[in-house]
Image 1: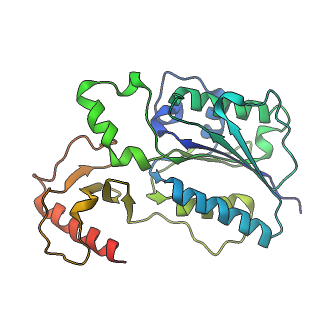
Image 2: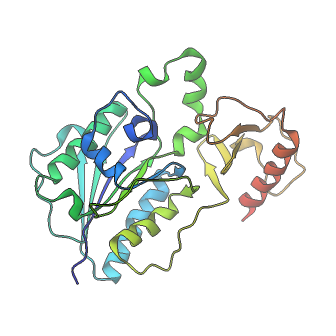
Image 3: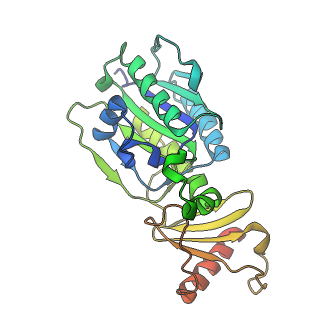
Length: 283
């Protein structure tokens, strides 16, 4: 039985809010929108470069073990080939390389153009699709330049991890679905296995909480809350250690970029989440 090919398109960093399906009304991406409106759009997916690299390696391993053909491709935002000739593989993975010189709009348009060029050779409904990013990213200046917003946005822990994830199956009658399960990059492997027809031992389900660690911050993210603390402030071996800086608490998912600290008005909740954060770090 012939497998339905899976096409994965990933970029290095991108905020979900740069995509029209997540609310950006200033950009036109009809082919990307078609995939989103006939697939599942994940609204609480978080990723980082290190975890994403591990998933990429694991996909290659599972392909080898299950005799699936795999074709990775690297493309730069400004150097998309005029013609894309998709090879016959079970999984085709296009990794779009972007840097800080490119705007979020440039990156989104690169995804759109890549989809357009692929479907010149393949029926868009003949493949399973996954569109995602290795990590969260910056919005363009016109979306994030308000004085009251810019500094907090720049330092936001959520901004660094919250990433787009769209999965569109090869069905003409597929229906749009919004998924609000809390997911981390490790779950991407399970989703890829499902879409490629692999019998994976992994079971994907929403998480109760995830641990977010950046260079300067550490955070506990639940479906409703995000507790943030500077990395230097946490001692997992001592639950009674004094904090020089108070933890910050943000209501999720409404407060997308950690703008309104409510820890002072929710001291008991902050304390409970702080204890849970310590327990997760100890594991």
